[in-house]
Image 1: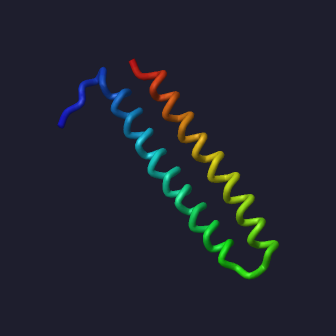
Image 2: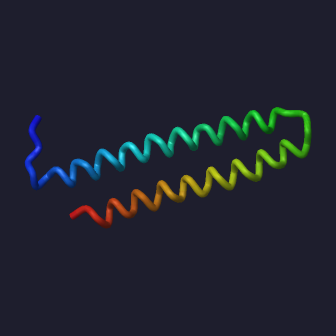
Image 3: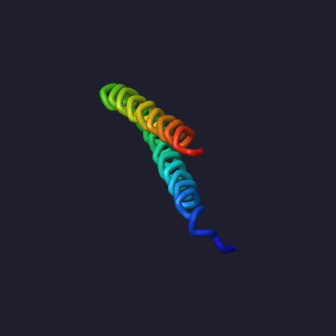
Length: 77
């Protein structure tokens, strides 16, 4: 499959965006796993810390993924 010289930037953008979504999605799953493991502990301080921090990081990273999708939609012709 040969990509013409004019289309290479578009193909590279799509590949990089897909890679970013895969990496960020994997990190989001990691935050959910950490949240579940933290909630299953017996110490209340660990439970609250896990709920607060993992929720904040999950929301922030999801918002970043949404902004990446918006930026790609704006930049594409």
